[in-house]
Image (cartoon, rainbow, N blue to C red; front, side):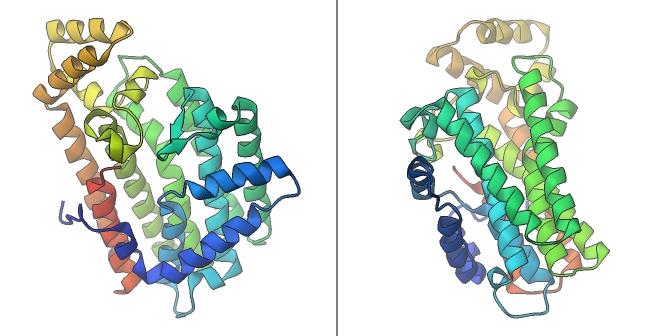
Length: 336
C-alpha cells in the first residue's frame, strides 16, 4: 500500500471541497425540515451525530476531478441533489440496521431506536428513502436515477444476503466479498459514478471512477469488519465482537476457519456456537491472529486500495484527484 495517512485528518484530505461540504450540511438541515414535530426532533438528533460524510465527499471530488469549471460542485443543483440523496439512503440503512441489530449506540451517541423506539427508527428511515427519491427525480437525469436506484437495489440485496448467511460458519470468501460489494461498495460506486455523470465525463472516465468507488468500498468494509476484531471501542463507538455476536461472519474468521486445520477449527466452532463471553472472544481473537486472519484481512483491504488507486490514472492532475488518492489511505488506516 503506497499511501500511509493514519494520522492525517479527514478534514485536511477534504480541504479542496470544504465549501461544498459546508453547503451540503446547510442543505441537509433544510431538507430535513418538516411539519412533523417528531421528524424534526429525530432529524435534529441525526444531524448532531454527524458522520464522516464520505459518500457525499466522493460525489463532490469525482465531479470536481472531471469538471472543467472551477465553480464549487455543490453550486450545481444536480450534484447537490445526488450528494444529499446518497447520504439519505446511507442514513436510512443505518436506522434500519440499528433496529435489526438492537443497537443502543451509533457514532458514539444513543441510537434513534433506543432514544425513541424501533417504529420511529424504521419510519424515519422510510422518510429518508422517500426524500432521496424525490431529490433524484428533481435532477431530471435518467442516467443519475438509474445509477442510484441500481445501487439502492444492490444494497438491499446485500443486506438480505447478509441476513441469510448469518451464523453460517461455512461462509466462503467469495460469498463474503459478494455481500460486501452489494451492501457497502454499491453506494461508494454510485457516489463516484454520479459525480462523473453530472460533470458530463466520457464513458471511459465514468467507468474508471465507478471502479475506483467499487474498490474503495471493498477496502472500507473489510477495514470496518477488521475494526470489530482489533479496534478500540472508544474510537469505533461500539464494543469489540459486536458483529460476531450478531452472527456476521467476516474475513478474519473466514480465513482462520479455512486455514487452521480440522481440530483447531472444531475448537473455534465450539466457542462460537455457545453464547460466547469476553474470555471466549479473546481466545477466538488470539487464534485468528495466530492463524494470520487479521494480517490477511489487512492485506486484502490494501490490495483493494491499490486497485482503487490504479483507476485514477484516467483523471488529470488536480487537487480533487489528490484528495481521492489520499482518501484510499485514510479508509485503510482509519481507527473508527
